[in-house]
Length: 248
Ligand SMILES: Nc1ncnc2c1ncn2[C@@H]1O[C@H](COP(=O)(O)OP(=O)(O)OP(=O)(O)O)[C@@H](O)[C@H]1O
Image (cartoon, rainbow, N blue to C red; front, top):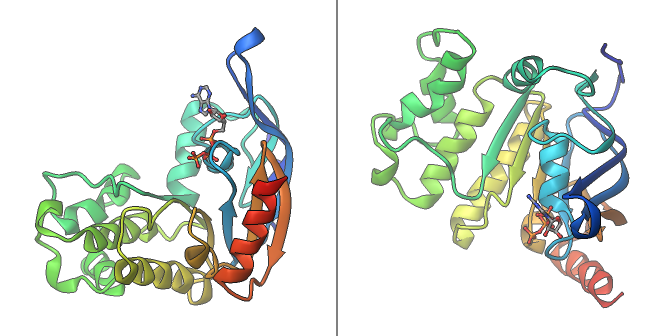
């Protein structure tokens, strides 16, 4: 069964995720409600262990919540079979991870073409090259990941995540392993996906400077949304709200 939720790219209703059972049970997410509007950039922050990665994984359909409901692009994930969930992820969702996760034996171009091939499509002429050009790597198409800098590898990973033109891009600490210049370039690409291509970006980060690129910052504590900051003025404002959260 699918439930249509027009106007929301990602919707969480009373989403809980409990790891383990009995005395060792850990409540990583505690009845979280979140609505993420299409074509917006959301940053998810919070102290270590507050549930950021769990939220991202549940919202992206990579992990199943213990309770509650997640919808992506108007489709409820509850009750979908693994196969249907995989299909939905391939069609509507992109992922970027801190560790890039490129396939070492494949060239940049082959890495970017992978999601299209997995979806059973033969990439159209120029399609993959255009995507690489969008992330500024047209001249690196035949290079393997080991022949690229960290920043370039992450740009290939972004091209790979965006090549299917997914409705939502989830990014888990995408700038965590990068220096300031490479981070800025990655954040600019994520911002472009939102502003130019009307895609929705949800990014977990520890870095207030990265979060300052977002339209909205969700601050988690103990598996709940403890604070929300709309249109942050800059990194200092975000850092202050984070500090307040950590003092509680
Ligand atoms: N597979 C698991 N089994 C048991 N507990 C887990 C598992 N994954 C996460 N947890 C626990 O759930 C809570 C939330 O973890 P999560 O990784 O979502 O936090 P986080 O905010 O992303 O942390 P960090 O910033 O350190 O990456 C933590 O207490 C963590 O120990």
